[in-house]
Length: 253
Image 1 (spheres, rainbow, N blue to C red):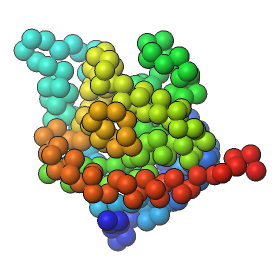
Image 2: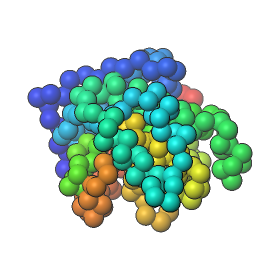
Image 3: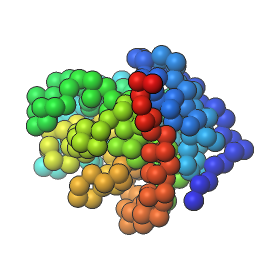
């Protein structure tokens, strides 16, 4: 079901450190002009019920968390949770969320990881695509009770990147593998847990075995994963079709 709180769904505008691909404007409700992104929530989101997010200062994450190692007494998840409890706070400024997310994913999808991905076809340009899509995904949201309150087109990662970047299914699937790769690479998983503290939670993958368009979201620690799974199953198929409907048949025309 599409739910948009139009009473408070004002335009979101942000200027990021690097320009985004202007083909993001193919999707409804988003306009990209270099580093400036404008989002009309009423057109962009499938569901937009919540207008607050939990964030922490990225510079603080870098200086006080990224280089801290877990111990036999304190797992990395506990380190991240303790940091969030002390340093994260709510914001209704979506631009702040996007700016923070850009820093998080510029760190997680940096070029030095290319050699260790096990996917020689993936290059720096693909990492840029991941950075852009993941930044926009930060506006998605799940509540503590597991209810998914915000859903934008980037939730369906392969569909959105296919439309925006003219990717074939194979390349889109490989990008999804890199996005989900923190599952399988322990070093990247630990990096991800620490970095996502800046976005107030941990990255939870909707896909449960292979990439299947279920995407992911930064969920708060303690969120009900059973309810999250059930809610995701209700809306996924219909909204994926709506994203693919914006595919450009001849990008060169």
